[in-house]
Length: 66
Image (tube, rainbow, N blue to C red; front, top):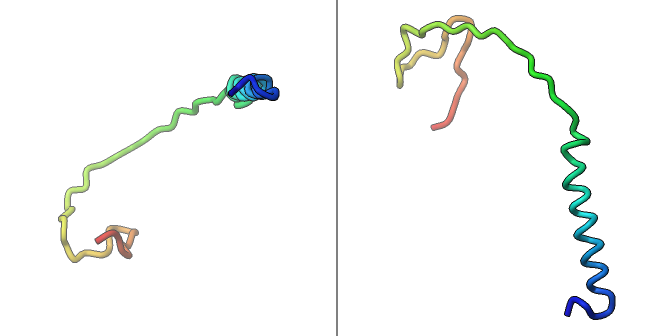
């Protein structure tokens, strides 16, 4: 059982240790600053699913999942 041979003390120590680590982790992480970025998007007017095209402006499609 838990009270035999100091098992309760070991369990209590382990529980206290784990709780102290769990509660101190968010404090150790610190604060994170949020930086706003600007995003611009435009419509792709000539996009055909299943097409044979490999060049898209300066980009070249080299492969993907099949």
